[in-house]
Length: 185
Length: 185
Image (cartoon, rainbow over all chains, first blue to last red; front, side, top):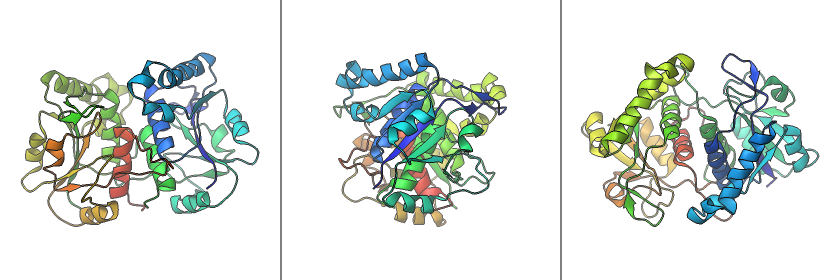
């Protein structure tokens, strides 16, 4: 199995009128996505944020659950939050994972040439370079990231008659890890 | 397709030493699980809480996103949060769904006679009475609920080498809806 990591991007992302903005860190994103990452065997969860004070916040949350009172109260959180690393840019995450790392992006509204989940799952099962699966906060990843991706994953469509698919990024990440990496499928 | 609903239970649930307790409502549970419910075509999300002040809190969050300023700011939240109903007991949810409703419970640590996901998915695709899929907060559903269930769904195992599967209830609900109800599978 190749090394698989995830990144949660706070800049560049879209706001609801598609302006490119920097979003704030949401505490529960750190917990939920690190727990899902560890459950599905990912090696790292990169929290990408350009603002040093926001990275410090993520680092403090991490420490609280590794060596602070949180770790004593709920020890199950420690191995999950240990996957978390706050970095200024997506390139820092790619550098960390090493040369040749493949960049896969996600979107709720993908169109054009998309990698479907069965094909993506088959590719991850082969040996190969690390894969970084990238999620956007706010209203989704900025084009500067989407355009440089090696692959764009299909969107999750669910089963809503009217096409409603406004999942939280916490829910979308969980579903995508399950589709790509669950043993049971 | 039969009617499928979800319930998020705050009593009776276990705490981390398996005492039976009442948990507090988490705001992001209401949003994440209602958004996942609507995306996967569920009809209702029941928030089960025995404390009137906690049900009032859930009702106020709902109103904020249906007729308050939240609805004007992020209209996408309105149809999702509209699925939400706060009820005192699980029986109120069952009464609402009508006689013959099947009660399916979830657990991170199921053992014994479990309904696996492919079989559950096939059963939901058939015509039949409504199904209520029940999730516990805290450290999982109390035995009083698990014991009366018509079926207990298999646990989500992920792919962690050491067996770590501490998903948030928000992530677990998203994965379970996707396994049972996605179109693409």
